[in-house]
Length: 113
Image (cartoon, rainbow, N blue to C red; front, side):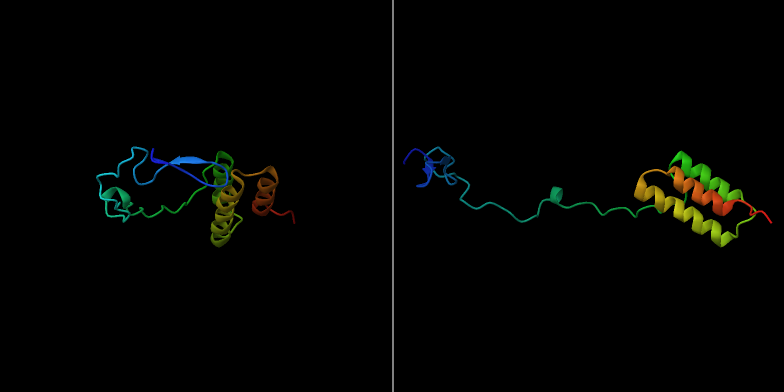
């Protein structure tokens, strides 16, 4: 068209020219744009090692884990397994549900003879 706009034949859609950006003259940049990621701002800093969670984060989970830890009826292996199960449940559900609390407390409680 000569005015820096480009139209297509199908819908009459008008856009600015990618070369001159609507000015009618080519840009002074030379036409090449650096698309390589050579600038320092493009490089991400190395991620720090994620700290492994060792204790539940919610209030209900922390109380339940303390009950498991202080229980004298459960072996040390079972305690670590139950505390890990509490943390996994928190990770998947966001918080400890009432049903889950009952399930874990049932495993920790003394069984009547």
